[in-house]
Length: 425
Image 1 (cartoon, one colour):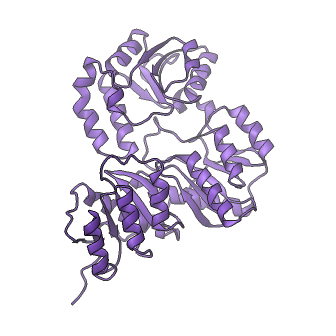
Image 2 (cartoon, rainbow, N blue to C red; image 1 turned 45 degrees about the horizontal axis):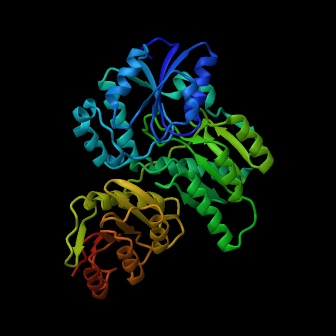
Image 3 (tube, rainbow, N blue to C red; image 1 turned 45 degrees about the vertical axis):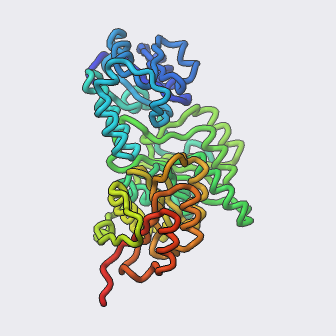
């Protein structure tokens, strides 16, 4: 840290963690100044010295922190992607607007967060991590509550750590559910709580009643640990229990525990364990590079140029998933991975994404693994929810998609393409 160790700024989004960090700093004799982002920050933060800003007021935020004598700043809490309709910009916003648009266009959440860090550091602030100012809020090594992990739970946790590590280069979520060696869910844009709810729904639909499986959370490899550390809390425990999982395993020292005492008490009541694991085995990268295979365009609807790198990226994601015997389809929208299906059909992946996707215009691509069908049902579902197109992965082109399917895609206004080596004539 570069400023006074007892004087910390907090740029606060939603949730309890900004308040808990402030309380931790103050309890050790320090001082805080909180920048409360309007519409996100919890009202209880008003008990500390604070300034309320609109998300589009970086100048006001920076000036308030500097006036309070703050140099080192923590950014945490939940933030929605910027909605320009709610912007109340200051002059500084227009100065940084080209940079804002650039990192939003990059797509993934990591790119957005890196852009925000750069934006504030260029204005003279030093962004630090929660671990630098309130390490007591992280989950330490060992069992926090509940029984020690069984052999199967430990094996599932290791597989989950390895899966998230393998997918980390593609900027996908920080959580997964593994049960008896099987990947039940991979976190997408919906977040951990929604992921757990869909696990519960899928288990109920299948008639499963036994308790088993582990929720795993850890940062993505290469992630900037100053921002967006994974977190667990009471809601995580409630949803873990509702899904019939045995417990939660996290990377020790790299995951925050929100409302710790309440979370521990709730875990005891619900009968689930919470454990910090110090070693997270990294998954070795495959020597195969499926995302460099040729891309073949079929039909008469042109592929959006922005979709081509997205398709290649998802080819890599599904290839990594295949190493864990999972991955049916994935959805990506201008650089942002929205969902990855594990055992669901491609149509089911699209249907669940539709619940939280804007449908004001055609955008986003559905990419289907080589083991799955690209058929009429998928095309009609893609058109219904206003996707721009679909792609089929394969080893060889011109073998998986017939002429009738291509003609249907044309009639629905969808582009259609495939990846793979050119077929020999």
